[in-house]
Amino acid sequence: MFGLHPNAEIGYLTMTCETIFETILSVQGGSSGGGKKDSGVMGILMDLKARSPPDFNIFEITNKIKDKSPYVVVAL
Image (cartoon, rainbow, N blue to C red; front, side, top):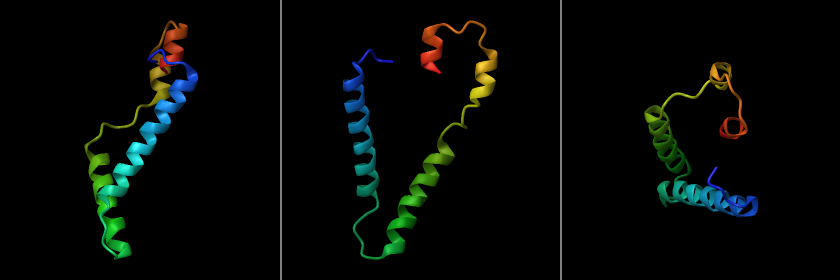
């Protein structure tokens, strides 16, 4: 999508995932109680999920497309 070489894109996506997981781990805190960590992270994740837009219905989107050029197929 950004015109990266496939190997560069793999590296970029890997680093992005590592950053996301490191952020989640740092948010959970450092207390020794096992349940407190999980409930804190779960609360944040549920809050983010509630604020995010609803999931896309890929079948509905694909049915609306009349011309499936290579750019449209890659974007889907």
